[in-house]
Length: 272
Ligand code: KIV
Image: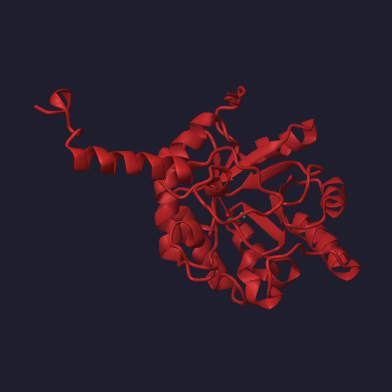
């Protein structure tokens, strides 16, 4: 098993920039609670994303839209308590930044103040430039997110690969350069053709982290529940499962139920 900590004591946005410069790939995973964040941080992950995918995998919603700012702050607080090394990035949830840059700044400041996280992530390009500018002006590091942006699922209509058509690919490339110029420290590219993602990564100087965007980018992110097989019915091509925890945990719980019912648990040594 690889525990990849290197010499870095605390991962910062500057460390990520240096990693891109040196050609060292960046590892990023989601976490939403103390116990999982502790394991992932100890394993040596570079970036922990408190993603609004918490809406799906923690709360059971169909989309990321329902999760609130208070709920994101609760998840972020739990993660930050566990983390010693990773950079912690928190998603601004749907409805807390679009169309009102003052509200965006307020939302970002609440996340930073109340959770102790290190950066925020926002979905979108030029259309949210005022929000990004205002947050950056307060000294809060911002990560962009382009391609498949799940908060816009009702605009897209499906979760299929984005930017396959030339016009959308061009807009994505322009948006990536735009986010870099605004001052974003990194950009997530979700579910776009690998060749396009590689081009963006070569064009912009900030780290590009892909999910379903191929190997030509500067790092990879996955939802930890997917990687560990805690989710059962999600099998996109880009996902590599490292465990089948749904079945493992179900088996263990089944065994526990049998042991309780049969009187095998607790035994002589498991009591006072
Ligand atoms: O919310 C999330 O988990 C994300 C990743 C898929 C990048 O935004």
